[in-house]
Image (cartoon, rainbow, N blue to C red):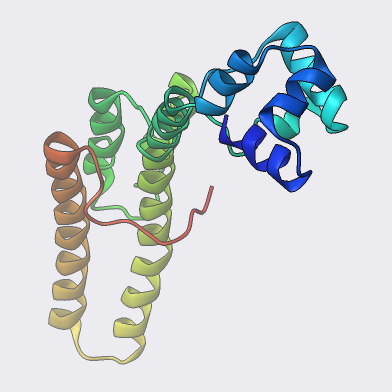
Length: 190
């Protein structure tokens, strides 16, 4: 409770004077300034005597245990907990429709909705497949419009399907290994 000492010194009050003004022993004030947390009557009395709110005594006086708890909460929020097996199934559910990009996002989207698994990683999987469903026909149409011949159209179709299969399998591998996506968008479409 170094905050008590700081406030006391700002008001030019000695420990003895604070003890006399508040009716709290000098030894109790010394313990509080050394780190013991005041509670109940002591906290109210010190706050009233110093003409400050009880919260002001705690601003810089957060205990080490409270700091550790806050750090843990932040770590849990950053490393979102999810069911890795279900996420992998959601990711792999796009494989049967990898050849038909317009429908490849439907299986993961439906599984996400039915299982209510709405973690960030699942949203990224569905967003990535929606992106592939949008970009693949555009690339295919560009190649068709350029009239590069039927072999180039066929090669483009095969490359689009293989690239989507590769993205799905690589993400499944990374979900198994590190529980993250290897390929993901910087934004979410859902």
